[in-house]
Length: 429
Ligand code: CMC
Image (cartoon, rainbow, N blue to C red):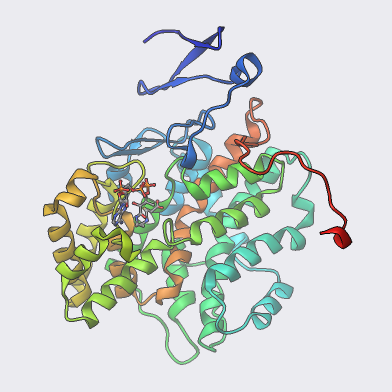
C-alpha cells in the first residue's frame, strides 16, 4: 500500500497521505484538497467518504463480518448479555466481574424517570408515534438533569449520563406503551435483569403479573445485542454530527432516534411486517410483490432487503432468522407471516434483479417476527431498535468528544441555484 497518493488538478499537485485501518482498509486523506486545489469531492450518501477514525466496530460488507471491539457478533449473540455488550462498546473491553457489578447496579440506580417527566405522557395524543415520544423525552432529560450538561463534561459525568440513558430508555419505552393502552405504569424492579425488567414493565398489570419465559428473554437479548452498534450508519453519523457542535449527549441521541425512525433505517422493521401483512391479506402472492419491487415506477421496495454495506449477506439477519425459527418452535406458535417472509426471501434470492444488485435480507427482515411473537406492538418496533442501538450511539459520541482530532461536522456543496441578480421591490415586480 502506498504511503501517499498524488493528485494533479489544473496543474496543481497534492500529495495525499494514505490512512490504513487495523484490518487493512485504505483511505486517501483529502483534508488539504480544497485549500490546495479549490476542488471538493462529491459523494451523495457518503458511500466513499470516511468521516472519522473509530475503534468501536469493524464490518466487512463483502464477507459479512461484524465485530464489536474485535469480538465477532456471533460470539456475543451466543454468550454475552446486552449490559455486558454495552459495557464492551462504551469502554472498549469486556468488563471484569467487579466492573460489570458496578455498571449493572448503576442501571438500577437510574432506572426511574423524574416524577415530573411522567406528565409528558399525558400531554401526547394517544395516536402519537412512540418514536416521537422517545426522542422528545430523551431530549427533555437535558432539562431535568441540567447539572449533567456542562460545556466540558468530565469522564464521570459522561459515565453517569451513559448509564442513565441506557437504563431510562427502557422505562420510557415501556411507560409510553402503557400510556397508549390506558394502563397504569409498572415501575422497574431491582431484582430483575435488563431484559426481564423491560418485559415486566411492558406486560405486567395490576391484574396479572407477566410470566417471564426464558426463550423470550433469550430472543430479545440476542436481538438487542445484534442492534447494539453498526459503525457509521445514518443514525450514528447523526449522533456524531450533532455532537460535533458540542451539543450534549441527550440532544445528540435524541437526534439519532429521529434519524433511526425512517423506514429506510430502523423504521424498516415496522415496514417489513406491514408489507408481510399486506401480502398475506392479498392471498400470499409473493411473486406479485417481487415483480412490484422490480418495477421502479411502482415506488415499492422489498422492505428488509438490501444494505449499503452488506453485499453478500447480513450476519445479523442469519442469526435473527435462526432465532425466530427457534422461538416460534419452542413456543409452538405458527406465524403465517414467517412463511411468507421465507417464500419472499427464496423468490428474491433466485431473481436476477436482486442477485445482480446484491440485495439480501437485512437485520430488519426477520426481527419483526420475533418482536411480534413477544407481543411488542408494531409501532414500537423502531423503539426496540433504538433501545438496542443506545450503547453504540453513546460509544460513538464518547469517542468523538474525547478525540482531539474531532472538528465540527460541516459538509460542503456545489451550488446550482441562480447567479447573482438584484433585489426588485414588491411594487416593481
Ligand atoms: N427493493 C427493491 N430494489 C432495491 C431495494 C429493495 N429493498 N434496495 C435497493 N434496491 C435497488 C435500487 O432501486 C437500486 O437499483 P438501480 O441500481 O437499478 O437504481 C439498487 O438496488 C441500489 O439501491 P440503492 O438505493 O442505491 O442502495 P443504497 O445503498 O443507497 O440503499 C437501503 C440501501 C437499505 C436504503 C436500500 O437497500 C433499501 O431501501 N432497502 C429497504 C429498506 C430497508 O430494509 N432498510 C433497512 C436497512 S438495515 C437496518 C439499518 O441498519 O438501517
